[in-house]
Image 1 (spheres, protein in one colour):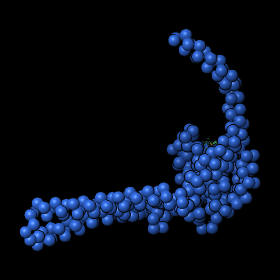
Image 2 (cartoon, protein in one colour):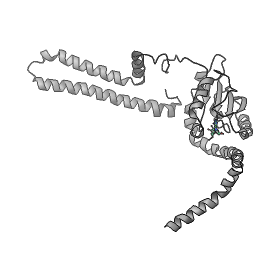
Image 3 (cartoon, helix red, strand yellow):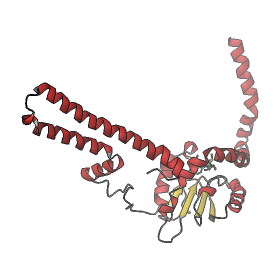
Image 4 (tube, protein in one colour):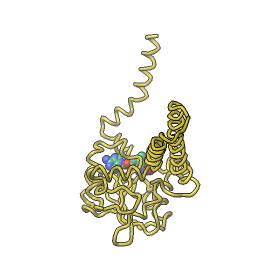
Length: 265
Ligand SMILES: C[S@@+](CC[C@H](N)C(=O)[O-])C[C@H]1O[C@@H](n2cnc3c(N)ncnc32)[C@H](O)[C@@H]1O
């Protein structure tokens, strides 16, 4: 057994030796930077096929973030070959950020294939420091398949926050920081997201209150039987509301986005 392990380890060392050597000579990084865009270009074809419906859903509400200019200013961090371009809304102005300059030629190809987007510029920079992009200049920032391999996720998210235009969300069913203040507004927001919970609670209270009010008019019915009926009615209401809530969530999260091409809210 020990001999087998030793032979396998030796085989791995021998196979990996060229990589160690290239890394030692400082060439491995350069080779990866050249080779990776070519690989990603091929990978993207299959990946986009598999993810088409998810990406369509994910980017379907981008237009809602348009600022006063009337055109969506979008910054894509770690843009790679521009795999997301085809899902962007028409007229969208895209600034691409990537630390690997070798992506530029692939990006230009993507721009040519996606004439509906307006390519602004390609900035060679890491997401952790994209000072070339002005504060509050972007309506939206897109970052896909990037954060898992960066050096400092927190720093990137801070940069994303810096470049995003401050925005107050006012539409009925969207979250807003102002709205989130205070217990009451939080409760209202939660009730709006899951309306069947307050409906269930209100129904329960109504049935119990009505039952208690009618208690003295129950004629010759036994108290214990009367209370059991009341409890079953109240519980039935809650179970009914919870079931409707679950069905509604399934419709909202899975059926509506898939069949009616509506974004999840
Ligand atoms: C797996 S690719 C994803 C490309 C593209 N976003 C997509 O969905 O196809 C990861 C990309 O992130 C870039 N990247 C790596 N480190 C980065 C960093 N610190 N900041 C921004 N981009 C980075 C890579 O150069 C590469 O283009």
